[in-house]
Length: 96
Image (tube, rainbow, N blue to C red):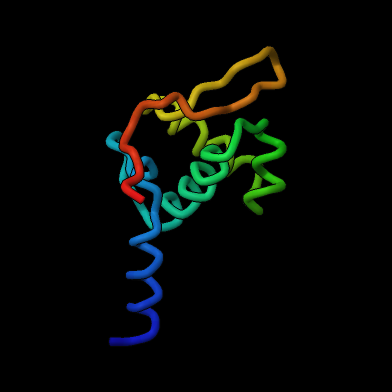
């Protein structure tokens, strides 16, 4: 086994269960970005700007994945114009 294979298998095990979406093709970069966002959401609700700072992802990437997660019903947004995003409670639960 190569080191790359081990690194990929370790990363794959750590993807959040709600990072897998039904309506789109799930590629590594998308799964990784959605996992970062969902792990932040497990602690508290955030605005998109705060998610950009905490996740080290670009704003357009964060918004793209938030919209995908919203279409699947995994996250929802609250507020007016300065939206706060939070987990909706739907989707798979973590076993650990």
